[in-house]
Image 1 (cartoon, rainbow, N blue to C red):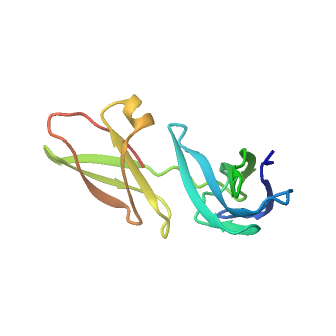
Image 2 (image 1 turned 90 degrees about the vertical axis):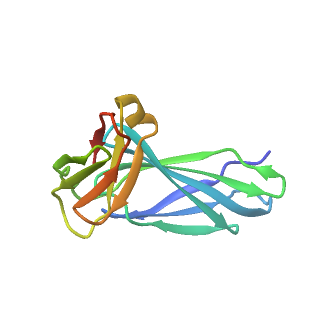
Length: 163
C-alpha cells in the first residue's frame, strides 16, 4: 500500500508559505502534485497547482494574501502509482488588506471601464459575469497591477463585477 505524503508547514508569513514534502516509505517517488486552494470573496474558490520533481522537497509559495486560509493538498507519483491525498490548512499572517472600492462605468455597448482604490504594487483580479451563479462557478476574469482596466463584454447583457 502506498501511504500519503507528509506535508509539513515549515514557515509562513503574510504573503508566503514554505512547506516540505516527504514519504514514509521505501517506494521510489518521482515527484509530487500539489494544489493550493483559497476562497476569493466567499464567491469563488481559486487554485494554484505545482508539479514537483524528486523525492524530498521544500517549497515556498509566494504572492499570497495576508490573513487568508489556504488548503494544501498533495499526492506522490511513485513507481507503483499515485499515492492517496494529504491535506494541511494554514492561515497566512499579517492583516488582510481592505477590499477595494470598485466603480464600473459603461463606455459603450461592449466596453466597461472598471476602476478601484487600493494599495499599489499588488495584483488585482477582476471577475465578471451575467449572473451570481456564473460569477461563482465560471466568471470571466483578468488580472492587472493597475487601478483600472477596460473590459470587453457582450452587448445587450447586464454584468456583475468583482475586484
